[in-house]
Length: 151
Image (cartoon, rainbow, N blue to C red):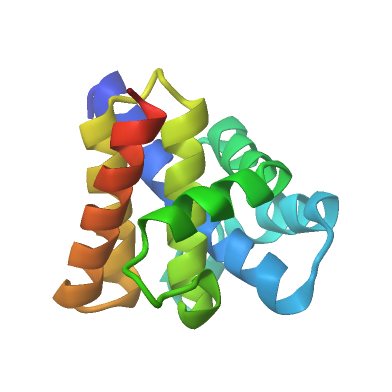
């Protein structure tokens, strides 16, 4: 496997883990340092209930989780601003919020990652949780956010 391919897979694993961590943070209120510790030591690269978790780019994972929580208010406003009339962030389920928050953070704070790559990666993450319709929602919403965030 090439270095670029290995890095791409490690970042994809980091994105999925970040979405899981953000979901757990919202569900349980786990403090970020404890959450990062748990993922570093017990999830990333581990095998849990016969499911092997891929090795992730830990620094990238940390940036996504810390950044999405630190800039949460700003991120939530951007997401709400792109939702259809009558929709609020509160109407979205928690996994969807975690996906959109991580993706929005990456669009805002990681100009080193091309916009199409960010959107495509979070559409892939959405496939882990949802059917095609919801993945299309992620695609459209992140694309709309990207037009403002990367203008």
